[in-house]
Structure formats: structure tokens, C-alpha cells
Length: 286
Image 1 (cartoon, one colour):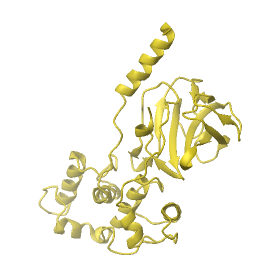
Image 2 (image 1 turned 180 degrees about the horizontal axis):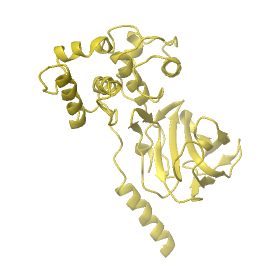
Image 3 (image 1 turned 30 degrees about the horizontal axis):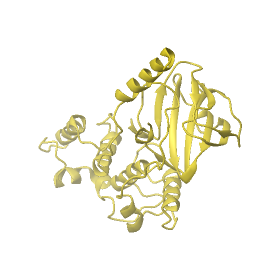
Image 4 (image 1 turned 120 degrees about the vertical axis):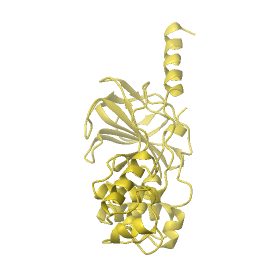
């Protein structure tokens, strides 16, 4: 093997070995608690559904404010003190446009993990939540009415979708931001920080279905369609080097790393979707 190819192989193996593990889904009830505390100005960490020390500390601060025993446990007295916002758990009632509260926050969290984020986790059922719910119901083929009833909620407790295909790394780079909760919202892909104009290769053969400027924050974007309804997204590019309807092979250059759209520095946002549902790319990457 030529020395240059051997060094490149070592770089890729090192990137895989030291890449962070795929994110694990937390509990939607804990996420709803975190949203409740966030709305009260008591919690400012990631809404990840994991009850760690920061969540417990926020609960204790709330309990002290209300003259309760600061044990960090959300028992019946603490839930009553949280007021109407914490009255309903997910599944206690129908959720539709205009409803709000703990159960809506839990709904947002589960929708996001199933591939349909709806903006910031805020516990308010507005147009973005309704649109995400409608797309999810259509994806599940369970009757798209934009109302979260027993059937919809039951499916949200089933395993999240995953990629049906394996993909290659589009660039040699460490993994920055993972797929999953980020702040009070949800990141539907992974970020791969890299130098300006780094070559971006197609992660698998397919057909280019979009190549150009995306107004939704992705900046210069390339989308490649693959088998089984899978699509790969390459966002924030400095330059696009393919055209729509072009057939590409694995490794074909689709663009150059940049920072276009809603981006704070040069990196590649890489995303996988299965019939429209965002799925975690890490388990699918070789």
C-alpha cells in the first residue's frame, strides 16, 4: 500500500476510534420536567431527558422557592406546586393546536427523536408542532390529522427509526455536535468540523435530488437519494460541485466545506433521512 494511502487510512481509523458514541434517547417525562424548569428560569442545560445533577439542582431550587423539602424528587406536592403546566402526563388527553403543558413538551421530545423536530422544546402546541406531528403520522401511515391521540402516542414509544443502509464518511474529520438534543432544541444530524474548502464526498452512490441554496438554514446544500427511501444531506457548503439529477458514486465530490446558512464556522452538517425521518448517522457510518 502506498505511504500516502496508508496514512489516510490511519486518519480515518483514528477518527472512528475516537468518535463519540451515538446519543441515547432520554426519558420524555424528564425532558418535560426540564422544559418546565427552563420556562421558569431555573434550568439552562441541555434538554436531554436525563435526570443528572443539574436537573436535580434545578428541582431543589424550585422546591426551596415554594417552601417544600428540597429533596430533588418530583413527588405529588412538587407537581402540584408546578401548577397547571404539569397537570397532564403524555397520554392523559388529546393534544392538538392550542394545547400546552408538560405532555406537549414530552410529545415534542419524542417526535424529535423519531426524526421530526419541531423547533425549540417549549411545551406549546403551535403550527410547527402540528406540522411535525402531521408528517410523523403520515410517515407511520396511521391517519394524519395533526392530533396526538392514543394510537399516535403509543407508536411514539416504539423504537426510533434507523438507517437501512451503511454509508462512508463524507470527509475525514472528528465528530463535533451529535445527533440529538442540543440546548433547548434538537440537532437532526452530525457536525464534522473541517478546514475551508475541504473536499466533501458522497457517502454512498445515488442520485442528486437537490443542489443549491436552501432557505431553511442549511445554506448551500446537496441532497442525494439512495435505496430504501434513504437520503443523505451535505449542508453549509462553500461550493456545490454537482447538479440535480446527476448520478454519483461513493466518494464523488459533491461540494467543498464552508459555513453558509445558519453556521458559526466551517464544518459539514451531515444528515440522513429515511422516508423523511431524520435518523442518527453514526450507527450507519463505516
